[in-house]
Image 1: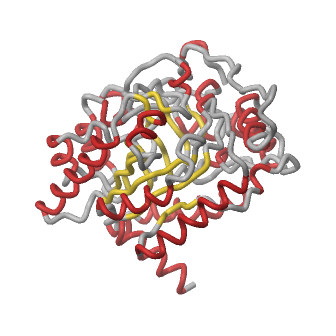
Image 2: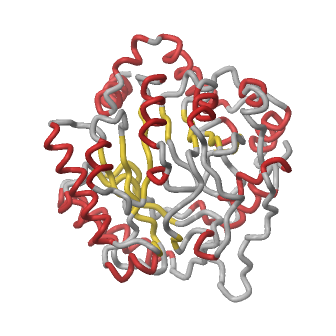
Length: 382
């Protein structure tokens, strides 16, 4: 009990979220949600505590592990206007973890700071974060982020050498990203602010093999607050793994050691226990219970997982019907039941599951699961 209380206190302190204590309904929903995420019922009595709202699905890069590098997108491009954002946000009054991300670069939205301000006013207790490629962190944005209401900025880098970065994150420059991080940290120090916290991300790829340790060292040299995430590219975005399990284990072991030597911490560091790639592993997914959900820039409700094709399977549209009706509607109820029975409920989920299980399969003749249908928003059905 004491450990749990200390962990909760630490979260509230880190995210400057003690104001949630003045909102007992939000706290009660959080506690109920934690119980239901463990029990996985068909009907949810709690509302989602984590939601991703996709401000835009446009991006300024075409990363090698992303569909964009193959000239593909999961659906047509668009952005959410301010009025639509307000309509969407109003349907999630109990959210404590809000991400303003989706299949795009949030800082590219022309009204990003206005939307962020609206979210902070409506959810004063919430942790609000974004993932960014960092290439747009110019002086004006860096200074404006400080005091903007953002809790956390996570910059995805995936490389330690400029040449590797150019191959992995096509259209960007590593020096520009590093300069942007320094610029942001200078602005935060000048303001005497603690927030937003800033972290870095590293996806383990074929092209960046051997660069994790140097990435960790560079993150420490830049002075970021933490390594946010080190992970595998275990999502069906067209990535074709050519590395052995042993190469991942060696690099992750070296990375953990270097982090410890530098006194760095990581919120999520990939395990070298590769049970997720076991072909005999039963299908298991918690996203049907909202951990978290994503609302696309067109208003469609999708799971908050990493497969890009989730947007081709809409649970409903919050611009056409209330989320409360969608949340316990027939599609969610059916998919929760099937998920609990370890059955992928649709092609989108089956593709994600199959990709992970075939991650280390022989390359020759291995198909890429890119053939799922991509529909216009008006064509999507439950």
